[in-house]
Structures are given as structure tokens and as C-alpha cells.
Image (cartoon, rainbow, N blue to C red; front, side, top):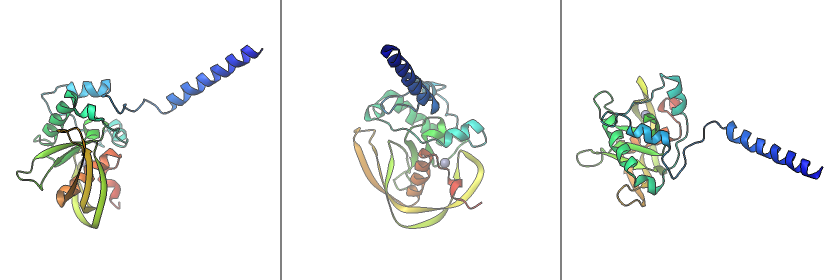
Length: 207
Ligand code: ZN
């Protein structure tokens, strides 16, 4: 009697665990490892720019609304990271995109990674920032026109800060690093980091 009660209780618990793990849909990627689908996407047609997800497609649209997962220093030191960063730059600078920034989710990689054109540096290079967060926003905000590779044929005016701090894992040293960014480059960082929280600039527009 006692044994059968324990068995019943155990199978109930097992069902509960099974149910709750299914209830959230597919598991989000692990912090310390590239998932199989991420590896495949990074490797697929590696000589070509990556496909940019847009709100014109329903599945893309849902993907763009998810929060991005973290990256570990080990992941940033991997060859998958190097390939992904090369390809994100190749994508944002390709003639068909011609953007100033791009975020991981926009190329189907749900991770905290962005590529940004550094207008505040000599020769205005594109640089990639893994495990990025904005840690401070200072002073007044000002209005500026924005567009987005994931929102085709649209522009809108958004209020952004001109003086921010960012933290990220340096791809060179694999250490946590922080930096102060000012001006238009700071606006790009805010737009790209919003993508990592599932936010599009159109969310700030009135109608
Ligand atoms: Zn965008």
C-alpha cells in the first residue's frame, strides 16, 4: 500500500517536471555553449552575408521579440565566435543592407552580441561587442531619425541619450571591459542593445 503510494507520488512528480519543462516551449540556449542550431547557422553558406530577419515575416517577428541569452568568455574565445563576428560585419556592410549596426537576433542568433560602426573612431570601423550591456545613461535625451534592417522601408524619430557606459567581454583579452560612448555612436549602441531585449525602435513611436 505504502509502496504504491510512493510510486504514484513519484510518477505524479515526474509528470509535473515533464509538463513544466514543456510548458515553456523549446529551451533557450545555454549560457556556456553554442547550440547545435547556432553552430549550423554560423557555418551555413559562410562565404555569404547572413539572412536578416524582418517583421514582414511572422516567425522572424516572434524571434525578434525574444530576449537574447548570455555568452561566456569561453564562447567568445571560440572559432564560432570569430566566424559569427566576421559574418555579422559582412552582413551589415553588404550593399543590400548598408547599415550602421546589427544585433545577434537579427541574424537568427539569440545572444547578447552586436556589431556597431564606431563613428567616434578614426576610419569609422565596425566592431563587435559580445555579452554587451548598457550600464549607465547620462544627461539629456535628444531626438534623432532611425531606421532598422529588420523594419524595412520605415524611419522614425526616437529620443536617445548621447552619453552612455557599456560593459562587454573584450574579444582580445576575454575579460570584462567597460567604456564610455558619446554622440551618434551611443545612439547606435542603444538601438542595437534594445534588440537584445526584444525591443524595436518602432515601440517608441506614437502611432
Ligand atoms: Zn535595428
